[in-house]
Length: 155
Image 1 (cartoon, rainbow, N blue to C red):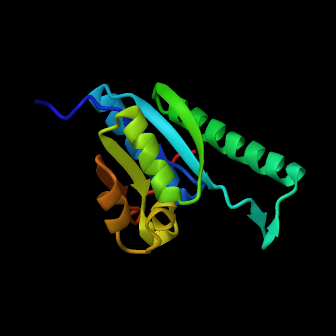
Image 2: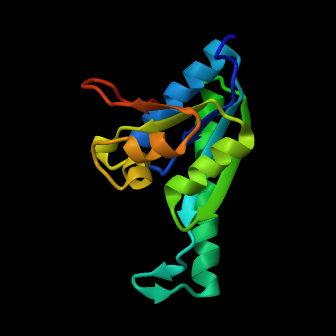
């Protein structure tokens, strides 16, 4: 049985490393005929600087997250991808919310940015150099996209 096509979920958090992950996921989706999903997870803690968020602050945070997903969708489309969906999720733990989305979509591949540059993967695992947490929790394969010298995401 072939691995592809399978839904691909790429995590984004607005960092350059997550942009690299997005562009890699776009290439993979195009090359394999896989559906591409772009995801952003926000914590449900509801605090800002140690204080409860006001409804206005929560609304602005939601608007920022929605705008982030729309910008990333536009980048993917500009690079030739068909985006099957964008997903804004909330959770007490980013890694668990991300994995729940992967399971819901039946995605066979999660794509995340380089943990050494403070990407979503660092937040997913709580570690700067290990993918152990996400890999352990996910039933999907995980691709970590590392930046290399001379590699720059095309905006």
